[in-house]
Every structure is written in structure tokens, then in C-alpha cells.
Length: 129
Image (cartoon, rainbow, N blue to C red):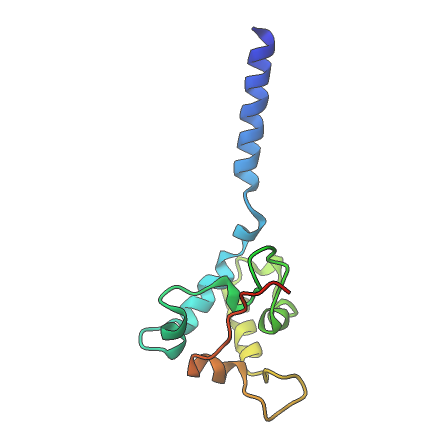
């Protein structure tokens, strides 16, 4: 009986710990929330192309690991990180900075990320790298 109680208590503690720790990917919804608020506005072309809900694949490649980023996500990761999770203003500034960049580094004739967002053609990267 004593072993069963101890086992039950250990399982309850492990379950509570798992709930508190959660999934590491769930720590970053503010990044997506700011992006959605900035660009998925009523009538925007990017909203039409991705649907009313944004996708993590705006910045990430595939679904296996959120460490896999596309070019847009890599540029953002140089400006914002996990310490900026609650800083909506810094997140917004990072999006604005990256959106002014050209999609092909060192090619001023390539479109900017902002132009792709405006045209609704910012590619969502669903393939794993």
C-alpha cells in the first residue's frame, strides 16, 4: 500500500512538472501574434494567401523542429530571441527591419520581404531542411 501511494505521488509530481514545462515551441506565440496583428489585416493579400490564421511556417521550415528556420526566420532570429518573448515592441521593430531586407542577400533587385507580404507571395516553407 505504501509503495502504491509513493508511486501515485511520484506520478502526480511528474505530471504536474510536465504541465508546467510544456512544449518549448509554445513559449513563442507572441512572435506569431504580433506578425498576425501586423500583416493579417482584413483585405490584405497575405491574409488571403495564408488564410485567416497565420502559420508558423512564415518563419519556420517544416514541423519537426522549430529550430529549422527559413531565410525570413533566420533573419529575424538575429534580431529577436527567447528573451524578447514578452517585448511586443521589439518584436514589431524586428519584423519591420527584416521586411525592409531583400529576399536575396546582396541582390538589391530582388523583392523585399515587405513587398512579398504586400503581394501575398511570402513563401511558407513546409519542407524540412
